[in-house]
Length: 157
Image 1 (cartoon, rainbow, N blue to C red):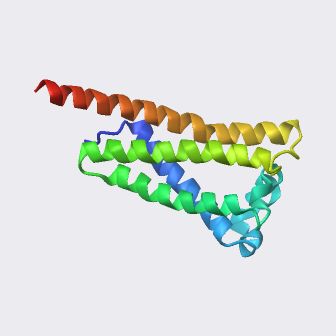
Image 2 (cartoon, rainbow, N blue to C red):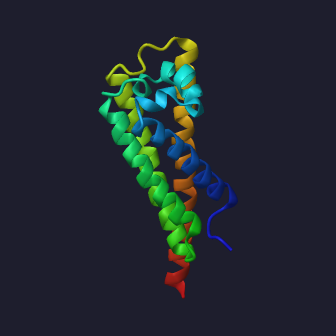
């Protein structure tokens, strides 16, 4: 049985799939702009987040490298046979995701990558980005709480 709650395992797997898709889009630009599999990014997401449309946006590329690192740790968390390792990996990758998303949002605002948005596009950008803040924060809170309980239990033994 996994030390990770089902919703955490689901999140780590889903975010791995999404982040891999996302990173491959960025790594393969400009060619990926013409790939049918990325038609949604081309026609909609690049409008609300200019970082996906502009090849010279270095933070977008950096964020994609971090995505691949996070995906590795997500897989490590989900496949770990040692429950303590699974908790630690899930905690660590969620801290990375949380911090990276906050930095991405701040950088996008300061760099003007999202300042073009109208109310609808701006709301979509914030709502989609907040998923990558709220869920990792919930994972951080849950895994931290579980790790603390395990440490307390081991002290009392």
